[in-house]
Image (cartoon, rainbow, N blue to C red; front, side, top):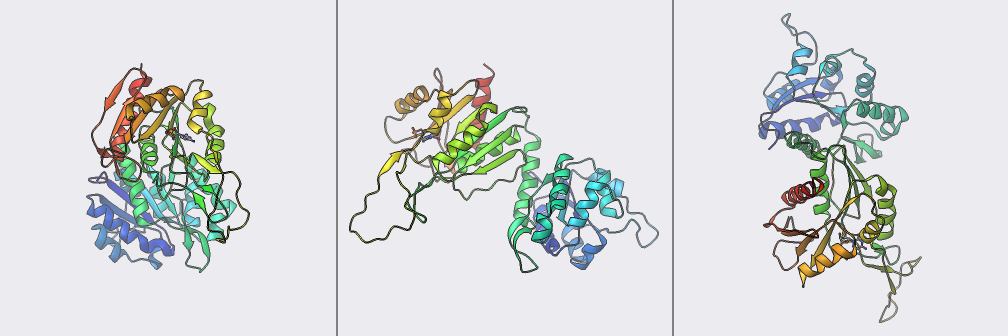
Length: 401
Ligand code: C5P
């Protein structure tokens, strides 16, 4: 794990979500990180120093002064840390952070920290939606901090909405990803990469659709890898259960092929690299029934019309963009892939054959071949994360030519 050997400073502020911090500390420590916890005075109403220090294996501080005339040095702790995480971050602590209201140990430590700062806000839904909170979160981001957005669900007040602190697993992933990306050269710094991912759903009526089994994994792995290399990533995904928590990745969710096309062309002129990994439905119902279609007749005929080919349209409008397509084939694989490279005016195409076990759509693995107009490279069966590395290495090698 990338958190292994890292020094993580966690500041807990006073919200009910503070209970979640136990699970997070346990995960960090279990994976070899060193964890130092500090708290605001209010946090002590929600969790005890004893439970936290037992898990973190270090004393927990909430005051500048120890019992025996000792001094809990905020500067020392701040400079010790590889990252600082404020979780849960209440509206009050957030406001103090972004306005420099330095009236407790947490804020003094935060203001002394030179390391990257991560913020996991937690508050009731109206507080989270308040313009003041929004502005404060924007301000924190403008300082270069990473905000791990609150999730939606039931809140301690009984209200339902956005405000729950991100789950410990999500916070862990964000910080682990940060350390993972740390050693990677920022070879795509200054570049904007647009990626399409997932399936598209084409509505038949208000409850039914035509879709496919694409999981979206390949596109999300590519987005994560491009971001680690310093790119700004625009990820346009059809319906998929994949999630991504990365401040360099702007996720746009769409449903149909037409929506995906429209979203792509909101950004197309500004991108440097376009990678189309979406499994776009080739056809859509000509008409979408306004009401749920009843099952009265023995047979039902739905007239389908061809969807726009998003990648082909990108190819037609190409000015400076480097375009990468995917081909999922079952026969005449290489010939078909090369045909698409030409027809869609691409710079590179990634072929996966459904004849290869472990390749394609739903798997966590993929086995690919890459073609340009003049080159061919074959790769072994790998995880989709590793395949993303191979694809972007190849893209970069082409950009250098
Ligand atoms: O023609 P075919 O569907 O096999 O081409 C696959 C490639 O084209 C993939 O990169 C896919 O994302 C893209 N595509 C698209 N819009 C479509 C169909 C495919 O962008 N309507």
